[in-house]
Length: 305
Image (cartoon, rainbow, N blue to C red; front, side):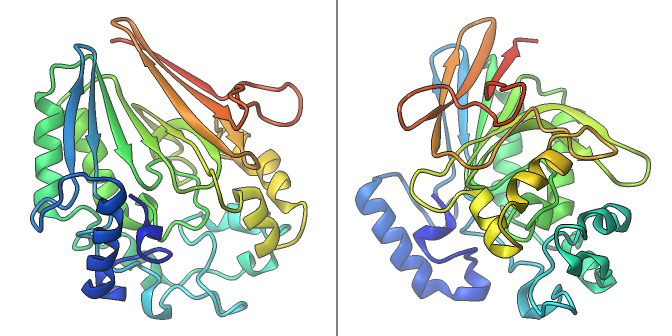
């Protein structure tokens, strides 16, 4: 499920359990999955010999957003800062798109984003997931994830970047156990974003990759990411941000393999013994391509290791 089973960027601490219970009931009327107070809708299952799916519940146990209560409000706009985790040098560059980024982010906001006591999954789900994926004998492990795991810094409060300690904890645990052939399959961003999942990207010391990839797809029925950026700043900035920041490799940008920000889409997953291929398809069933030149297909192929 997504936050919109309840309300935008939903968490129980911010919006209450009455709304949560109503959202659970409505969701399960249309999608009769198992739900419990201890597990939420977390589950995993095998798809033949080669694939296992892990469905994370990113809503039932999460703490409030770091921006709750106005802690991360930008002094120029009075609204939550759009790029609070981005190093100030890159914020100054992006101030060409939005002048408020020249204002520094408060240390209190950064501290809350990195607070080790904040969680998205809750401790029991986190341990259940890590134990299950470590034990999996499937060739490929597909983590069905509601919010983005990769770094791209924009609007991070509802995403894994807004729960930075637990994000790092998961990636470190997977690598420490040498869990191979993991891909995060994600929605919520209203765009197609394909990239390696990094421990860090533009921070001091340079990028630190993990062996894991993420494939983000969507939307099907709401504003695209490019439209959201244009509405938040000014028209044309969505594509300009893609060209100037999302596509260039570090240290100029985050180096996305695919960044198609203005298309309605879904993901098709194909798995064999030797490889997994994930393809973004548009409403006509055609492969999604980035705009610009050269036009790259939004396809991720992962060979078995």
